[in-house]
Image 1: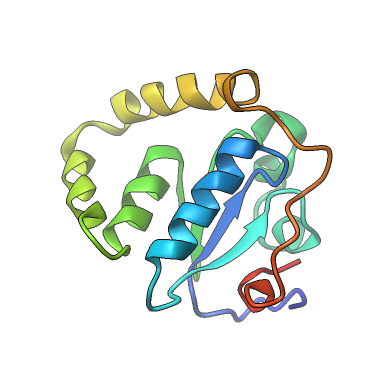
Image 2: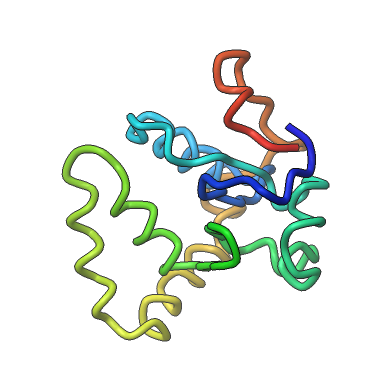
Length: 138
């Protein structure tokens, strides 16, 4: 898919070289039975064209971002909003939205800062399988 600014499905932006992030995307895909989400790495041209520049700078690649239309959720808010749309028991996690954002994001940031150390890093972005390619935006 190209840089289509009129995409109606929510797009999940993620760090394409992060092992934890890639595993999280695979987790979401398996539980997104209605194919509600599209995916794009924060390193992609699509991200650079559709997110504020500060979101795609190297030092800011520590956040998962959920964008639907003009609305953008980051960090723990994005994670909880995504969980709310998944199949199974995962929507119950949305109850944690009542915890103030600064507290939720404090925990999120600890994981984000240590994700390469704890889970490793790839040399390049994940390449989706042919059957999943239509859900990824370059």
